[in-house]
Image 1 (cartoon, rainbow, N blue to C red):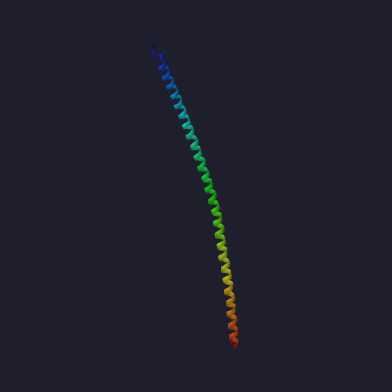
Image 2 (tube, helix red, strand yellow):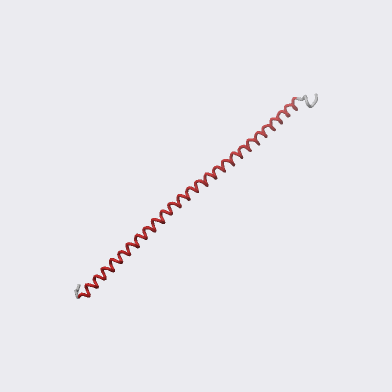
Length: 105
C-alpha cells in the first residue's frame, strides 16, 4: 500500500486541514474582535470628551453667574454704605448746625 492510499495518512491529512481551517477562523475572529474593541474604545473616548466638554461649559456658565451675582451684591452694599455715610454725614451737619444756634441737646 502506498502512503497516499493509507487510511491513517488520509485521516491525518484531513485533521491537519481541519486544524489549519480552524486556525484561520480563530485569526479572523481575533482580528474582528480587535477591530470591534478598538472601535468601541474610540467611541467611548469620543463620548467621554463630549461629556467633559459639556460639564466644562456648564461649570463655566454657573461660575460666571456666581461671580456676577457676587459683584452685584458687593456693588449694592457699597452704594448702601455710601448712602448711609451721606445720611449720617447729613445728620452730623444738622446736629452741628443746631449746636451752633445755641440749643443744647
